[in-house]
Image (tube, rainbow, N blue to C red; front, side, top):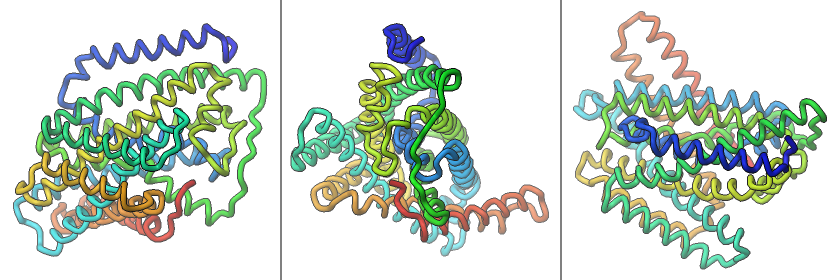
Amino acid sequence: MAPSSPMLNVLLLAVCAAVALILFRSRMAKGDLWYATLTPLSSIIGSGFLIMAPLLASIVGPMAPVAIFGIVLLAYAIGHVIRFNIMHVEPRLADGRFHRSTREIEYLGNIVLVVAYVIAVAFYLSLLSSFLLGYLGVSDPDMERGLTTGMIVFIACVGYLKGLGGLERLESISVTVQLCVIASLVTGLAIHGFGFLTEGTIRIDFPQRDVLTKFQMLAGALLLVQGFETSRFLGEKYSPEIRVTSMRNAQLISGIIYVVCVILLMPAMQSMDLVHIRLSQILDAMAPVALILPAILMIAALTSQFSAAVADMGGGGGLLRESSHGQLSARVGYVTVAVAAILLVWAVNLLEIVALASRAFAAYYFLQTMLALIYNYRASPPHSTTKRVNECLFITLALILAYIIIFSIPAE
């Protein structure tokens, strides 16, 4: 089947329709576990599934598939820390059984994370506005800020009026669109890649970087798969068991998506400038695969930024509710995050502070790892194998996260 054949375009549209039908009509899509999975899944996928493949190729060249596998494993290990804390640390913080200094570590982490969420919401929706207006041939900074503000207000209104359930319905639509597009993308790339395996070779002009720079950029790339921590702040609606399972499911689904997409996108990157990566290049690289892919990937780019912003606003609202011990409702928290994000949109250059958000997420993970270490030391059964394994894991992750906080550079 030729890459640009009408038959392939019809096949990809059929895949889109089939996945949409399954997701909209499946009983799974109506259960608590699926809705609890939507928030972390939205945030993880929205952070960078389109950009990850060319980004890693620009850093480590042909080792990009190995790099994404390592990043996904590291993110899953950090997710284990958050899940451990949901089950063991969170109840003890709530009833005051931890020492004051330990509660202060949690509080500091929450402050750091809410700042990161505000920046992320503003950045994701600004990026969406830039994509959309650029696609329409419009270049007006004030119009871009105005469109971004309108979307922030819309999401905040849905959150305030409909609560977490309202935000989850927005995420459900966005994630369904993304999964449909990803299914089509994987199908098209698999057929395209098979053609290279049987008929040609892959020749990509990889940038040359020194080893230290590669590690620093890979440290920055880790934060493209952040978002799983949003499960931590859905306690208003979901039990700890559902939040733990939903986070694990979200990381497994997104991890498979990232690994498969990076592997299959390698042949399509032959025509790309991997030094200055732009969305338009990614869309253009999809044209030889199938004529409809650039259009549906543009839709995916828009929905991914929107769903990531919705998820982070949901996480931020839940975080403010938890940090205020229920004195501030999650609905008011959504509005608070929205107001702060709007101020950022109009007051600063978001590209200059987005690196701050990446370090803030890493700092939050570091502090959560410290909490897990404290609990593991004080409350786990002495001399148990589980305690020793967790101790080794938590110390290793703490060192890696400290490296990311101090030495990571933007992966761009």
